[in-house]
Picture 1 (cartoon, rainbow, N blue to C red):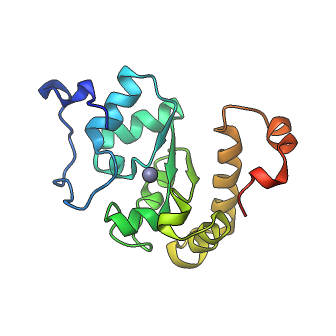
Picture 2: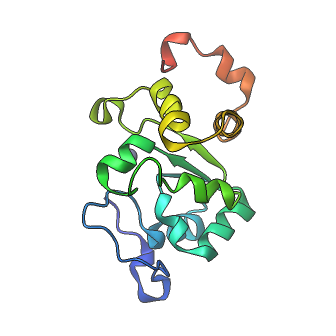
Length: 157
Ligand SMILES: [Zn+2]
């Protein structure tokens, strides 16, 4: 894992809670570093950004997408539970999010299952799920025509 320049004291996180010991996701410090120093437009995981209101505002204002992995986040302890997943706070703050499997073999999920989980267990509305799915296309660093030209075998069920 790379060492981010944000480990310097000047970029200490303003997270209100201490990091979880089981955490496998970036904390606020590394998200800040990724957006400030690397110009990241999309962050894998980063759900604990909800602990830093300034970071949330920054992500929303800049339209920086967080790739949320509902099942993986609860398996690693980054999220307390599916029902209390940070995706609610991210959406409420206007942060663009996508729903992902993370590593589907490790988490033992498919993208379709994650979408079902988002509605049935996390409590997203169908409208929220649609908005999140649309965001995944907007955040794909390509256009819809290119995505649709990919062979179906490259798409996850
Ligand atoms: Zn991951």
